[in-house]
Length: 296
View 1 (cartoon, rainbow, N blue to C red):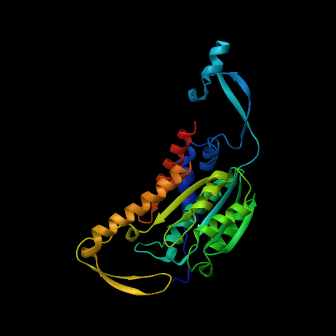
View 2: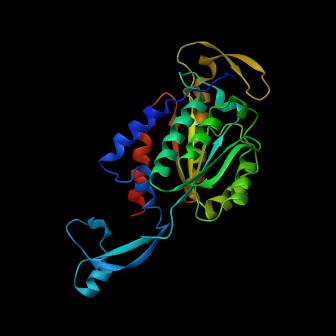
View 3: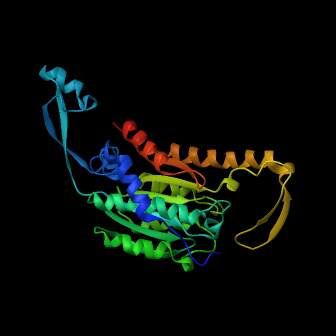
């Protein structure tokens, strides 16, 4: 285990703001929340369509009745509540790249949390393995960022296994309905018998899963290399020849990724795969934009 986690937060935030400034007036989450299945917004009536309006907002049924183009108007019921749960298990400390998975997640989460807080939303978080290792209740104010950075960079908060079942139970007991919940995990060694709890959480909250994987979590190096692998829980090690198991390994890891993608999709939730050897910024922006279009 490293004795220090690194994060280039100012660069991550700056890149995020530059990339979203032209298309998103209130930040990435501001754009995102305005299209979240109508949640957080309350219908307030109709008004005449103007050239400045987005044509997709036209209500054609109401327009046909009035013989004028009309758009719906909404008012915000309240600021959105965002809760971020981060897998703090031992497997999140593995890497074959410059950044371990927990470092990569820290940058993504910090950028999203910063943007949400800057847009006036409320943010809470928990680092979780088999229990909460660090947590802050949903609240407003940029001081939440200070708490998060302190906790996410503390190596003592990491280790053990990630009990997905206990994490889901924790979310269900802790949060109120309609909370936007983001789960960041590699979804490796997550335990069993979590499907019932998952169904409850997916129904109660607006749920997004971010699977963060190292390249070696997906495929093995080409050639006939010898790789020493270690079980992050038991510490048991094994020397493998990549050529002998590469094809089957990729089949199994792809099957695993597809399984989680399907589970989230069937529940009406969203899911995104991120790789630590690839920049997250454009993938997250495109993902949020796709979500925005889906719920228009």
